[in-house]
Length: 289
Image: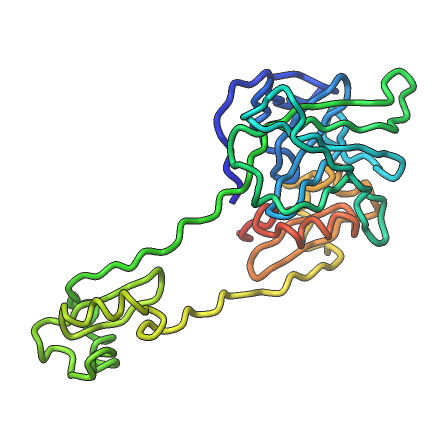
């Protein structure tokens, strides 16, 4: 999950649409969940990942731009020497199939980059406007925050644990019947749990939880399907109005497509937007009512 920190914002009304860009903080999510910034009449979204940086040039109303003829670079500045470049890397046009590229990418292991205090200067050239063929923005490095690891916890079993205790019957450590040493103890690590007969067995579970706790249940996966919208979808299409990826009218590209996963669905304007939905389904799909 990407961490978005609070920062002061300047609200600019651009092309009739209210879009929020930051000053030096730039801490505002864009269409792809990244950091928005602005240089002159050009908008940008920078998305950080563990092994890459992706820069999306955008129109001021956040519509994608074909990056085929663009080039650029990213210069890193370390907090220890903020006025001297740390290192620089070139950006490459994103490799996509069947559609125009809409980003410039940098493949780089970001594990050696400090999580705070680093700023990036992104320079891009090749824009068609002869008065502004180049643009430069400065953004802070804002890595995604990994979820905290699960912690082993234990407590006396409750009446609600009765069926699970009856099913397990014996302590996974000592092999003795649960209840033979007093009330069973429930030991949990995230969604995984087991019962032991006494406190003496707890150290062995803590030393090697995978040996005693059941394997985590596989994450539920549901296939994402894409199909042409039908007349039965018209009410939902009228309510949604615009594509969440391109921000275009749903009917602007020849008829909406319905993207579904289980009981979740959303409408998009064309096949080109399907890639982004598949890459970030939780961001775009909502439960159908």
